[in-house]
Amino acid sequence: MNWLYDSVEPRVMDEDMLKLAVGEQGPRDEAGQLARQEGIVFKDVLSLRLDFQNILRIDSLWQFENLRKLQLDNNIIEKIEGLERLVHLVWLDLSFNNIEAIEGLDTLVNLEDLSLFNNRISKIDSLDALVKLQVLSLGNNEISHMMNIIYLRRFKDLRTLSLSGNPIAEEEDYKMFICAYLPDLVYLDFRRIDDHMKELAEIKHQYGIDELKQRENLSQAQLDDERAQREELEEHKAAFVERLNGSFLFDSMYAEDVEGNKLAHLPGVSELLQAYKDKFVIICLNIFEYGLKQQEMRKVELDTFNECVQEAIQENREQGKRRIAKFEEAHLLSLNAIRDESEVTNLEMKVAEHSKDITELFDMLMTLEMQLVEQLEETINTFERNIMDLVALFIENVQSLMAQCRDLENHHHEKLLEISINTLEKILKGELDENLPYDVRALFVDKDTIVNAVGTSHDLHLLKIDNREDELVTRTNSWCSHLVDAIHKDEIMRNRRRVKEIHQYVDHVQNELDNLECSEIID
Image (cartoon, rainbow, N blue to C red; front, side, top):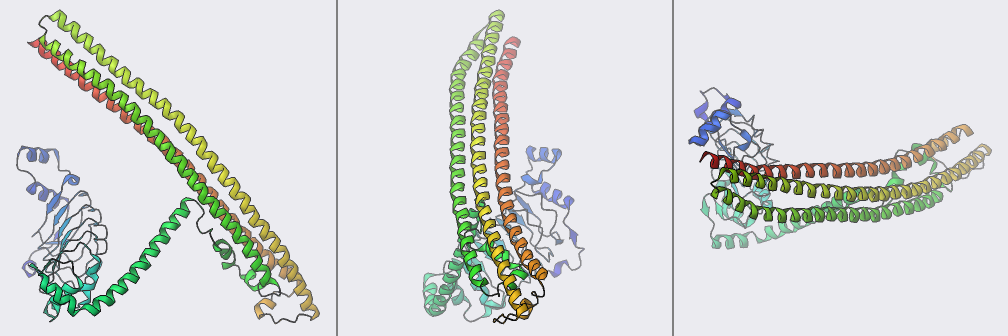
């Protein structure tokens, strides 16, 4: 499509090209010269123009992490790629290239304006992530099917669309169809859509629109249900009891239990199995409900802790601000007094006195910070004990309930073994009336075979129960450990930031005093 470049050597997008482009497009004043001397920092660049560069492949843009506007038009780019890190991009121009498919835009969630004018695109798709899209230019491509318009209905902010120069634009119903199915569109092919056209289009396509809306509503309802289920599952995972609100654990015990499924065909086992399942599920539900209650208690404990920490920090900060405000009043008076002093002896005395005031302010601010550190340390230690007690209690009670699951499994195992041996005896005596499947009957060759089959099933069930318990305990302890570690690390970082702030402020006022003293002595 870009025949002008056929005789020109394709270029590679490399660091040298990017540095040159940024340098040429940067400020020409003293600040720009200084930036070029000290080195260009790509992450600070907000706009980048790389048009008419004969670029074949998009590459090396990962450093432009704060880029807002990118111009790549009039090149020979064949594939949209290498844009994954440009998550802040708002405006992207890829017009006049050789692109055949829309792709590689999944991370550009802030993109509002996209131009793919004059390429080789035949299908509108893979734009789902562009939820803020307002302007889309796809003119002069190879789009031929009207159904591509339906895809664009998902972009609720889309107001400007260009499709002229595509086969689709030659359709007799082109404008009417777009106006009907994209009712919020304001501009089509660089012309404003008038209200009369919208009314006529809606009337003409009323039946199709109603039918489509019904399908969209059903689809949206399904998506809402799926999202609600995912959110609910995440809540259950946060409580460490996901999929314990039903028969999932029990069903998983038999999902891979070949022997157990065979033995289910024995006389009386079906009733035994149903009774076992009912009791097992009740215990799982007890674990699930208990887990949610404990999760709420942990959340309340954590919220209370965070409130206490923020209140303590805020109160401490307010005390510091009051002391600083009082100091600054005296600081201004002292500086004025030093400026007005003409006697060297008195000047040195006043400077020394004010320097002492600054030292006292520093000591006072550091004392406040140390008091806060001690207060927060006590609060954190109390929280740590409380949360660990909650976790320990939760684990202890869950393990007790899991033990009940194992007891049920042991009881079921004994009953199943009893039925199996009785069945073996009947088979050996020829007294079994029921017709068993061939693979089930093959288990009853002797007592060892049937005992091993029952034992294998039993071991698998216990393993499933043990694994679920171990998973719950491990995840719960890990959560608690990571939470406490994070709280301690956050407090260390807070303290370091505060101490740095105090030093910077005190250094600032001391420098003011030192500079004033020097100027007064020179004068």
